[in-house]
Length: 147
Image 1 (cartoon, helix red, strand yellow):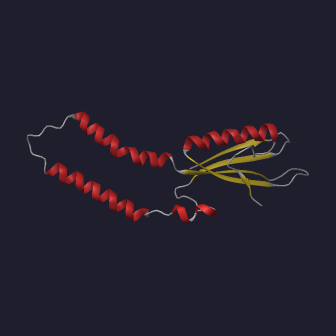
Image 2 (cartoon, rainbow, N blue to C red):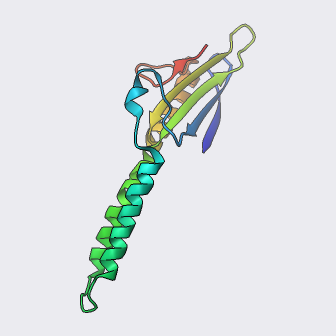
Image 3 (cartoon, rainbow, N blue to C red):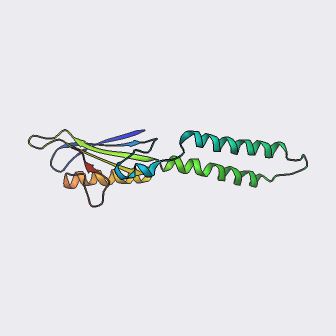
C-alpha cells in the first residue's frame, strides 16, 4: 500500500513524499542479525496446532455443556488480538525526493517507522518541515539522505 503526496517547499522546489507499507521487515545495518525469526513455516505450524486444539476441544465437549456467548466473544477477541496487532505494527518506508530546481541539486531521503499511525504522523511532520524550511530533515527524524 503506497500513499503519495506532492509538496511545494519553501524554496519553490516540488517534493514527492511517499509512505509504503512493508510486509517484510527490511534488514538495515546493525539490525540485520537481530531481525531473524521463525518465518512463515513456524507461524503455519503454530496456527495449525491452535486450530487443531480448538477442533478437538469442540468435538470432545459433552452435549449438555452450555458455553455462554460472552465466553466465545472473549475467546475470539483474544484470538484476533495478535494478528490485528501484527498488521497495525508493520514497518512503513518513508521517502521524500525532489528532482531539483534551477540551481539546486536533486535530493532523495529515506527512512523507516513502525506502525500506521506513526507513519501518518511522520508524513505530516515531513510535509510541514518541507513547507517551512524546504528540507525534510528535523531533529531526531527517521529520514536520512541517500546519495
